[in-house]
Image 1 (tube, rainbow, N blue to C red):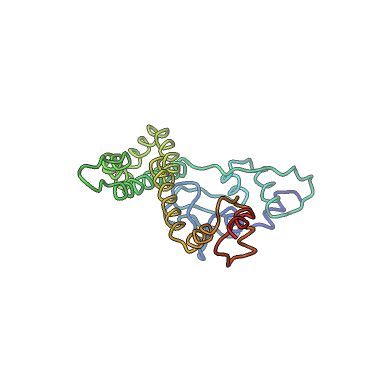
Image 2 (image 1 turned 45 degrees about the vertical axis):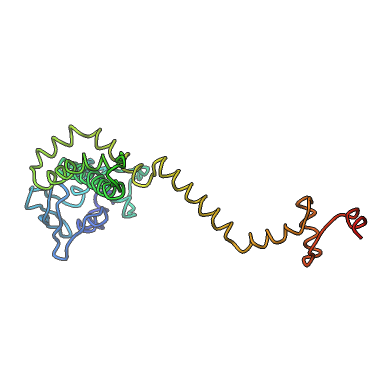
Length: 262
């Protein structure tokens, strides 16, 4: 049995479609992968497929060949490899197949990507406008607040543009602004969670102030002052050693001082 016979006898068109990520409804209908199909227009059964939208048709080998831009033999070998089939001729080494995308599919991905970047930037500007709004008329506006005020309206216009304008105009805009979209995506990823130097300094200062406050108001510090008031010109190590031995002492002094005093 050669590879063509092995595939046709073992794999249905529906099984191949589902293997390669195409959702097939219970009635055998699916969105056609060969054109920009928004509603299921391709009919699949065990032996053949047919698209009522673009007219694509054929058997399981034709389906795989068209989906991955392969020759019939390469498509049959891929199906045999993916479904674990054996046949008489020597099987070729495993290959990595890349599914070919239609122009409509490529445009949809580009449009969705541009929309997502702009939407993320718009939400970031909204956050900046709220978080960095000046608290008093005398306060100098924060650069992020100024950016939000200056650019939010335009970004909102672009989002409406992607919802309402024609695909031809959207495709032209994307082609003209690819580098800007890529730069904006990188900037959003960096700026979304990155504080400014001033914010980092304020955070560090606030942490130090809180730590100092907690230290000098703590019970441990009060006990420390009480203990250290009992000692006179002793090293830290000696002070702690004496305190550990005689925590109830009220006065600590050296031998000569005790000798002279008593």
